[in-house]
Length: 426
Figure: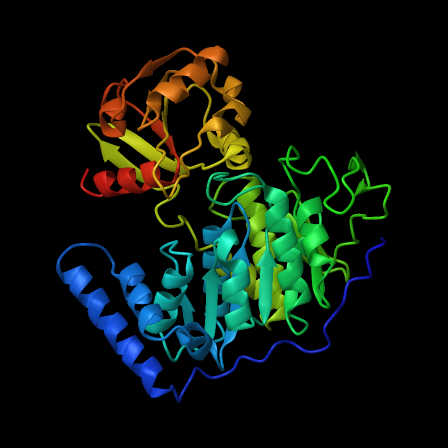
């Protein structure tokens, strides 16, 4: 099963005007969504996006299709990096016109609808989509561009086994013949899915986590890795990329080279930026203009920001699964104290068995505090990793239990969200 050569589009996707004429039912749904969102904000119940989108979908099940009509839509999905890559693409595509987006991370259908409701006339929409809901959203939206970042285990009790997601990605790639599928060819699972596309755009963005792609998604045989990339005996092979990330530089097969020089730290953010630059170029923004936009980004929905808590400078990082932790741990400065906060709310997934796949051994020699709803589970894992630690369930109290100075707070989804709310008042 040899991959077909990458398809190069001759023309960039047109940036269309926003929707001008909506059916009466859709207009009613949009009005109700806006009213519900405004009430939610007025009562201090939240930003109102989710409840507004939910009401719009109840009143008009076709609202997503109607609101995405006549726009240039980019969908971004994958296990890690969705919010960051979507923000990057939004900032870059703002050079072409107003952009609608769900920058708050509300990436299920109601959040996607809310983003379009908020800017009904924006000609461009960049929407991150939860992997589980991609097929339904993409079928309604019919995007100009679909970005597939990576695939690894995450929330097994909700999302399910990663190969199931790969098959769904493969099916939707095949069902969108007019969509450019931007895919990381270093991830065998993503490659298997994107090979079904009529218009794949291959990017070599690297892959730090290999544990979920040791076997071929097509035949089940072992994936073999070497200096040239990876391959399977069945013929599934890493395609030749049109874009390649090398350290801090993005190169094209045609010879164009741009240096990223991002404010955001880490290899994972460089990979996200490489994908964003390639997708934006396909939509009409030059790599040099794109990189200039990306260099202005210093945080993503509060990630990497610092706040002062009782005289301690706290940096907040998000890590939700083994692949994310593998990228996050190298970002922690040597000897800095670390608070590890893990919850198991519905948005996190109830199953915390993934803790055993995180290389917490890298935290040896630090002052570490196990925190969050599942602090005891974290403490057990740290014990087996031979990491000396204390236990304090409340993250803010855990921070103040540490000596004055810089502190790193690494949290999964709801623990991160809660920390953001508390630190906002710190």
